[in-house]
Length: 292
Length: 287
Image (cartoon, rainbow over all chains, first blue to last red; front, side):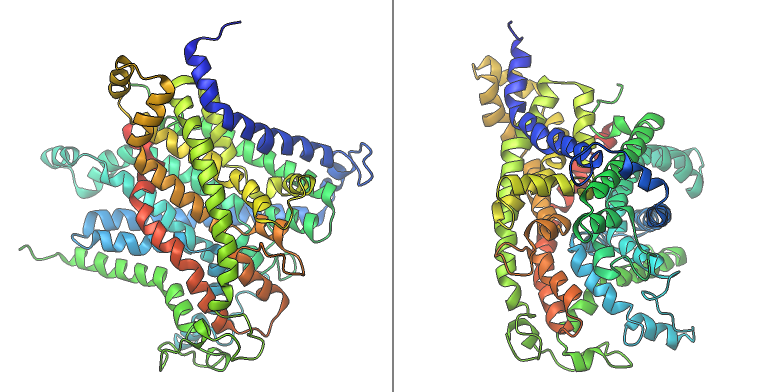
C-alpha cells in the first residue's frame, strides 16, 4: 500500500502526538472504564453507578457545581466584558497600563490566591471584615457559613479569571476596523446603536471563544476549594472535582472515584458538544477555517 | 486639547477602583509578608506597615513554627518546580505540539482531529487523576521529577498544539511554496522556514506551558506528596502542606513565599500577554 506523500509527511510529523494520544488519552480512558466497572477486588460490577443514584454528597456536589458554574461564569463575563468595553472606549494613553495591571491576577498561582483570600476574609482580623464594620454592616463569617462559603469562592475565582475574559474580549475590540465606526457616525448612529450594530456583531466570535474557554476553566475548578475551604463547612463547597479527589485520595475509594470521573467526563463532553453544535464557535477556534 | 467629558472622568474613576479591586489582594500579600503573627492578627488590621522587614523572606528560624516558612525556605520547592516545568514544557512544545500543529494545519487537515485536540485541552485534571497515578506507579515514577513531568505533558501538549495551529495557519503558503521550488523537503520547510516564522507562537506556548506547570496543584499533590519529603514536591505544595497540617504557622513567612512563587509567572505572563491574546483569538478575529 502506498500512502500519498501528503498523508505520509503528515503522519510522520504527527507521530509524537499519536503516541501522546495513546498514552495520555486512550490508555487512561481504558483504565478509567476498567476501574469504574469493577470492584476493588477486580470483578465486574455496576455498583459504582448504582451508588451514584442514591449518593447525597454527589447530589450536593452537582448542585454546588451548577451554582458555582452559573455564578462564576456570570461574574467573570460581567466584569471581563464590562471592563474591556469601558477601557477600550473611554481611556486614552493609560490603556496599556490598565490592561497590564488587570491581567496580573491571571498569572498568580491559585494556591497563593487561596492563601490570600483566606487572609482577606478572616472573620476577625481580615480587611474585608474591617471595611464592613466601618460601613456599619453586620460582620459576616464568609468562609465559616454554609450559605456564604461558596459565593466567597466564586468571588475569589472571579477575581482570578475575569481578567481572562477581559483579555480575550479586549483583543477582539482592538481588531474592529475604525472605518466601521466612522461609517456608523456618518449614518447618525448613537453610541449605543454603534455598539449594538457594529461592535457587538464584530466581537461575537471572541465572545463565544471566551465563553467556551472560561466555562471549561470554571468546571475544572479545584485549587481554590482545596486551599480556601477544603469543601467545608459541611459539604457546602464540595464541587464534583473536589468530591472525586476526596473519594480517590482521601478515602481511597478508587473505583467509585473512577466512576465519578467518567460522569464528569460525560458532562464535559456533553457541554462541549452542545456548544459546538448550537453556536458557530468552531469557526472562531481556528480548528476549522471560516467560510470565506 | 479636548477637555475630557464628565462621563469619561466617571469611567476613569470606576476603572481605577476596578484596578484597586484586582491589586488589593496582591498588596495584602505583600504587606502580610512584612508582618509577623502578632501584627497580622490585630484589630483594626494594619493597612500600612510601619516598617519594611525582610525577616520573613531571608531569616530561616526567627519565629516559632517557622523554621522553613520563609521565602528562602521555599527555594528547594522552586528548584523542583523549575526542573519539572522546563522538562514538560520543552518536550510538549517542541517535540509534540509544533510538529503536530503543523501537520494538522498543512497535511492532515481533518476537522475531527482539530476537535479531538480541542477536547483533550478541555479535560479537567481531576478526570484522569486515578489513571495517571496508576501510570506513574506502573513506571515506578511516583515521587519523582520525571513522573510529574511526564503527567504534566497532558497539561501542556494539547493546549500548545491548539495554540500553535492558529499561528501556523497564519504562515503564508507562498513562502512555503517558494521553499519547495528551491528543493527543500517538507521536513526542511517545517524546521527551517515555518517553525522560524511562528516564533511568537512558540514563545507564547513555552511561557504559558511553564506557567501551567508551575501553578498546578492536583497532580503534584497526588503524585509527589507524602508525609516524608520526597525531594520532588513543587511550589504549590510548599503552601498547602502548611495550610492543611499546621494551623499555627507563620502567615507572614507563607505570604513571603507566596511573593517569591508568584513573581516568575507574573513576569512571564506580562511578557507573553500580547501573544496569548493573539493566539487565543487568532481564529476569531479573522472569520
